[in-house]
Length: 227
Image (cartoon, rainbow, N blue to C red; front, side, top):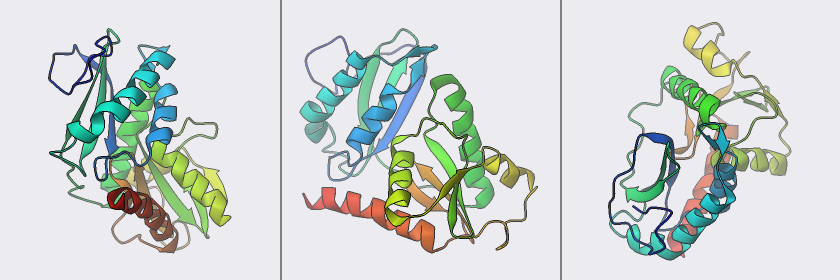
């Protein structure tokens, strides 16, 4: 871990105060495949109502370039975690990746609701629920949202594939509340887009759209692993 005020690149530990922002980004072969997307998303976040500074984003980029390869050696396909405390101090560390224990529709929706709650404080949700209805994508966030790294990838892949995207900020809540029948007429597919876990389809609601998006994400990881 590394204090942003310390110029010597290192993952040696030191103590932070109460965390105000935590980002968890998936690695592949000691690299960060969505680096630019994650850094843009970091710059859109807030801590204590104050936008993350350009200096902090530059610090994160510098340490990814200088220390990530060595610092992630024990967990080359793990998770890079960036933490900021309420005083604005920051640190980075790498840990193992643990896949989701459950991919039920309710479980993924609950994660999305928790992420949306986090976004009210930080400005960006690290996980978002998506649905496919009649071949089109539905993003479980308001129009004009600030996307996470993975959400920006999903949006760009949708544009490349010519798939329209609409928004329904009540999507996750409606899944939890059971207000919508998750059948073929209302929801053909359901998946979570997560900075940490990638594209995760809900059990029983898998389909070709989510599968193709997941393939696009997997190709980025595979390219990093081959490099």
